[in-house]
Figure: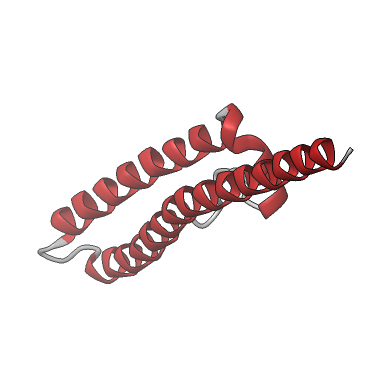
Length: 108
């Protein structure tokens, strides 16, 4: 009886360690993507303000090009983040830890 109980105890400990490591790895990957998405969002807001200041000026075209480039990068990172959330091994931990897909934001 004690050998069987010891076997079950070791199995439970291994499962707990596996689930914990699974959640830690998912958290790290999702945090990196979400932080880069937040950083790009801040850059877009900054470049949008700069573009508004340069309207009609000599740097208008350059400011518009930079803003368009940042928006393109944002869309790509957003697509990667949402795809990462849809992966089967990331779906359960991301839902439990509060990572949700980014929708088209009105300010972007």
